Amino acid sequence: MRWRGTPWYSRFPWMLVVFVAAFMVPWLGSRYDTFLGTQIAIDALFAVSLNLLLGTTGLVSFGHVAYFGIGAYVCGILMKTYGMPFALALPAAALGAAAFALVFGFFCVRLTKIYFAMLTLAFSQIVWAVCFKWNDVTGGDQGLPDVPYPALDWMSAIPGFDNLRIADQFYLLTLVVVVLSLAAIRRIVASPFGRMLTAIRENPERAAFIGVDVRTYELAVFVLAGGFAGIAGALFGIFNRGVFADYVYWPKSAEVMIMTILGGIEYFWGPVVGAATLVLLNQQITSYTEYWPFVLGVILLVLLFVFPGGIVGGIAAGLARFGNRNGRRVSA
Amino acid sequence: MLEVRGLSKSFAGFFAVTEVNLDVAQGQIAAVIGPNGAGKSTLFNLITGHLQPTAGQVLVHGRDVTGMAPHRICRMGMGRSFQRTNIFPKLTVFENVQAALLAHQGRGRNFWSRSQALCRDESATLLASIGLADQAQMIAGTLSYGNQKQLELGIALASDPKLLLLDEPTAGMSASETHEAIALLERIAKERELTLLFTEHDMAVVFSIAQKIAVMHQGRIIADGSPTAVRADAEVRRVYLGDRP
Image (cartoon, rainbow over all chains, first blue to last red; front, side, top):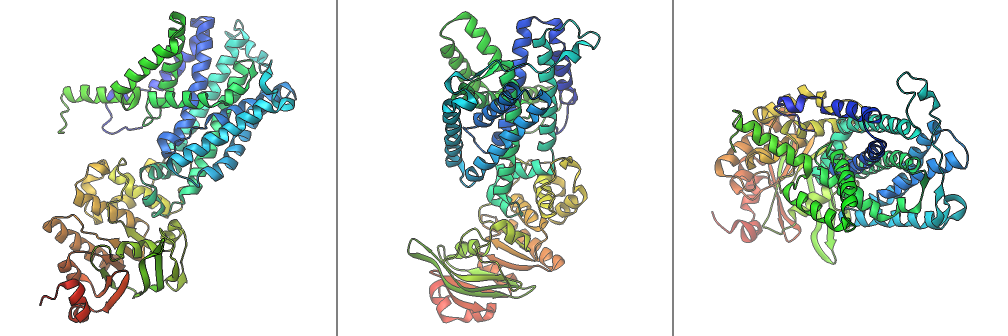
């Protein structure tokens, strides 16, 4: 987000490189790599959507998983129960999640700080309880298994794509949806609307007295963040071949918050790096020890102590120091 | 321009402001003075909508704005600065005034244009007029205290107010900073034909620029008039000016 005094490494199109590399995974990597790639892409979108609230607007939501879960259920129910095509179910999931965010957010933005956070958590627990008990629609504690993959046969018609498995094809679809969503969020953050949000984060009292209706803006970004979380949830349900009440349970809110903070909330790409780091750490450690939550906790603790601004913040600080040593001395 | 009618505010039975009446005419520079705890900041927060009055009315240009939300009062042509410097510390100086300009022009709802390219010239002009053109790309929180106060004035001016309320504009400033800040204020008020209402501790400042002075004591206005009249007022001398010649 900060391009001041741009040295070469910040002008370099890193994200394009990452995107191209990610796109090649089905051809270059294993089946397992594709699996990890899908999970990282979905979590990255979920984390970036949370960071619209956390990093951009300064709103701490402990209940962001509600909109992720609603997106997953809406898409899953529409595709499985009503046989709706993915191209319609995905936007419906986004709109459904955004609609709930509008209703819940209406109440949440009336509170501030920890009270806001607690209310978001309360709403997400209500959503969880409903999903867990409403057998007829959500499948209750049994969940909603066998959500079908979208029809992706057309992809096989493209030269070079004909040997891909359905999981690979879904990975590519996920990647495109995630990248388009991230591009949209990036654009929103850089817009005048985004500038108002940072103004609110920096100083709500002052923001009100430059003429910004703080609550309305907070509600607007809450709805946007909910909608994008809904898209991530919709993809996640298909990826996991089913939607279960776990997807709406609060530990997932904590997990996405860890990803976001670990990567760095002050940087647009921070949550993406955080999502990739957490998914990969998780996989690596699980394969070595059954005490993986303990090991993971220790690693996270150390990372957060070493990089208080998140991983991207740490890298940025390191690069700045490196740049200064190379002649561009900046007085402290 | 600004009329305050019988304004009162009680916090759990304690009246911080009691039945205050105050008129500020168009183009006037008016000051509210009084010892610490006299209710000056509370009065300001009532006028700007940050607090809801217990009783009374606030009229701007004859329109009742009592109880309106701050952002709506701001859009009616009232700007303010705060006692504790109130800027957007992690944004650049340019982004601080640009945000205020965008908000004032009602462009905050635009979520698709690139904000970096908007309002550049207006921001530059505004920064030049408050003497911060050279610091435009600095992070606002790293500015000196005096410069931050200048920037806060810039943010307030971005919404093109007709009436500007300043809560202790020179608080915490050195003598030379105070001198510069007051010169800046006087120039800008003249250029933009602003109506100014400010609170201030420094009596030299008050008597040098104010055309009208209201004295607050224990939540009430005990004197209100020209500087000469206020200076001569026996009660003011007793409670506040310390009965010096």
